[in-house]
Length: 182
Image (cartoon, rainbow, N blue to C red; front, side, top):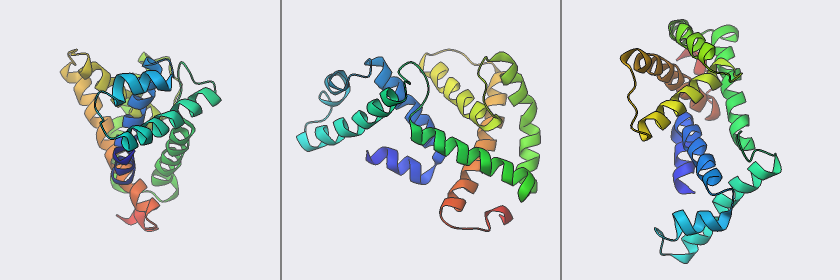
């Protein structure tokens, strides 16, 4: 899907959040590609070639989720790979090739990460926790629920950390080995 590839190329965090939505969308259709096509593709797409492309793309998500018994929760394999890369990069920016700006931003965000960790049963590393927090914010917004100023501030801190991490990720992926100097 072109939108997904564009997000993946330009902003890896947006891509992850988009994919979380797609996984939930597939689950809302009980991982049934025919239900996905009937509910979300055919009503909006007239070109049969595009319908087939979407069906194939969504089908890959469904197949991956089923293959790894992730029907109820969890992510497609690619998402776990990207999250691991982000976590390794995060650790590198803090310890291996310290980036002072990133280290300071992480220190500023750490109390919010810890507070979120205390309120959730999820066992994630700090980066996965921030990504899941932003996804939870997205879900709250979609449900029309209010978010307190304090919680909004915590989300903003996590978002700012992820923005910096995403920039470093894209530099790393583009082969800019001096990403830690920027």
